[in-house]
Length: 182
Image (cartoon, rainbow, N blue to C red; front, side, top):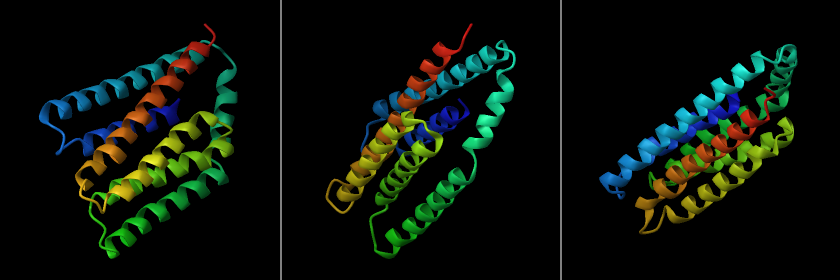
């Protein structure tokens, strides 16, 4: 659930940072409020799951060892590669004179690929689907960045990526909470 909470927070950030022109003021406000409510919903699910696990007795030790395995060498390798690709790619885009809007598309692509790469390491295929969608939104944004519709790239690659992350976190969080024994 902590991974879902982190994903939801990043999803909300994607929405908050990328809701601006060419979107109108009402759309910006509605998207930001919806993102905030979705992130708060994931937080509530996180607390509900934590409370449910406290009542299950001996599961906490197993959960701690599972968390340790989740953040092992494979995870560290993926995160290191993600950081290198993220910051290195942004520098390459700047050196190539890419429009500023390409940056959010690159971030969406790298974050999406990171989720796809983590799915087999964590044996959690729930994250592969949003990862694939973010990757596609990133590629689409990179393709549109040098065109006359570049102003819409933050909506396509940023806002929609945030919505995907928030929807995925809410869905998996809801299913997780529903599966916790009472």
